[in-house]
Image (cartoon, rainbow, N blue to C red; front, side):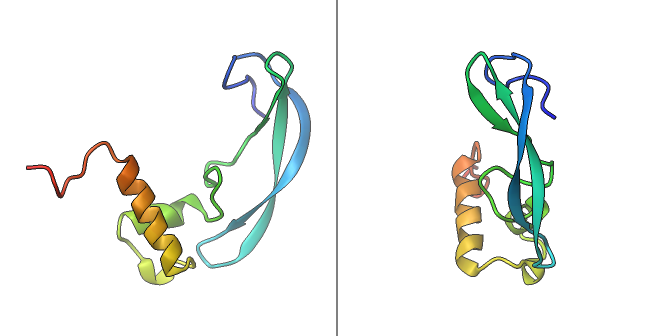
Length: 102
C-alpha cells in the first residue's frame, strides 16, 4: 500500500481495491486488484499500480518499451494505430530528437 500521499506527503489510509485490466505480451487480458489509499489532508484517492503497469495504459509496460525501442514488433499484441501512437507520444516527450541533432 502507498505509505504517503504523492501530493502532500500525508500518510494514506487504506480505502479499497479497484480492478485494473492489463494486456500482457502474450495477448491475454488479466484483471488485477490494485489497492487505493485515501489522503485525509488533500482529500484525494491514490491508486498504487504495480511496476509493470503504466498509468492510463492498457498494455504491459515492457510491451510498450519494446515497441518504442523497435524490438519485437511481431510479438506485440497491439494494433498498428496503437503502436504509432506510442511512438508519437514517446518522441513528443523525449528531451531531444537524436535524428535531428548534429
